[in-house]
Image 1 (cartoon, helix red, strand yellow):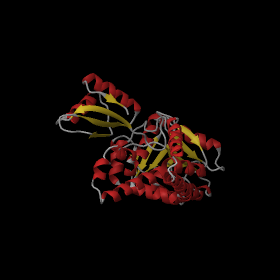
Image 2: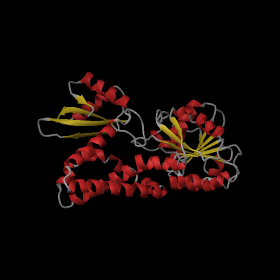
Image 3: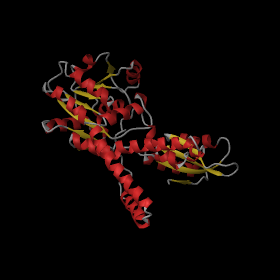
Image 4: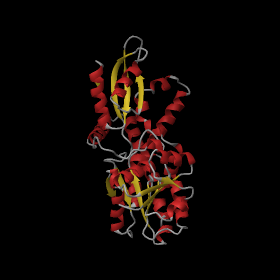
Length: 367
């Protein structure tokens, strides 16, 4: 592919898309724009983009592909501004937002001027953020949802896939409405539930300090997603309002059902409830990227003495294995504890397990 690609928003997603396009289409030019001057300078210095511009007009008017890599609220504003510019007739415009209904509706401002807009959502992320964390293969084997309206020509969809082929993602074409339902079920509602569990624990902790101490283990793990950006989730909930209100009604009914089973002590029904959930959960695809970034944890049995964390991480550093998080649990003086190390990929976890086995006698497990 030849041409000029304009990336609006130089964060993790925008930067990673820029790198994947640049690596796969070396003859194209990548131009970047960000409201933060430091992001533009850093993106250019790191080679994520070829050049940067100070205004949207300077980057957009000659672009063959425009990628809006901003939060969903900003994406709507960017579309409004782009609709007022003299863009090339054959330019493709896409975004990366987690909701599609309102963004696609706003994109009709572009369509009225003959400009093709195809909604996009690369379903991958990282524990790191910012343009410095950009990776060309961040989206490898991840699902990349495209949400063209029915009026969009199929050749345009294929052209966008060609531009994005360097991501090595798995493209799925769905309607904007289907997209918002799917992500509502498997991503948006779980984030609400995780946040509500944290709120409930915090409320009880006000009268019982043991809650906070005990929550350091499994509770902290199952509510990890509650640590996501509050600003991002505010926007997502407001943009996917209709879907989430329906899902929350269903969730309320589900909890009432469980409440009734407990109240009437329906032992067999309670068992069946958890058995069905276990069966469904156990049949979910493994080692595959989905809407919520997976956490690949490695548990290492280690003695509790000063320097143990630096010792183990030193092993990994020798083999250039990156970690995303590390913590130590269940430690008491003079006995073994558990070091929990998180990795971004299953491959990194396997390499780490082999590395620790090679450098020490510490036992490891993945669950």
